[in-house]
Image (cartoon, rainbow, N blue to C red):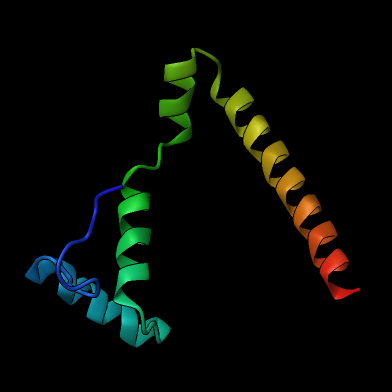
Length: 86
């Protein structure tokens, strides 16, 4: 990830700042740095088609693997949350 210099809460350009202000009003977000990094991470997301092309498998297999991974994450998260309650 890129390193932020000077002021950590600085939004770099006018367009990004305006996007943040619209988002902040809608979601009551108080941390522009958190929002900025979420925006940067979303830029690196791939579609199922792109992943299938890179891995040379069908789109159906990619979606199936994605669903399986999400189920596993939810299952583990639920176990962790239950463990923290006790």
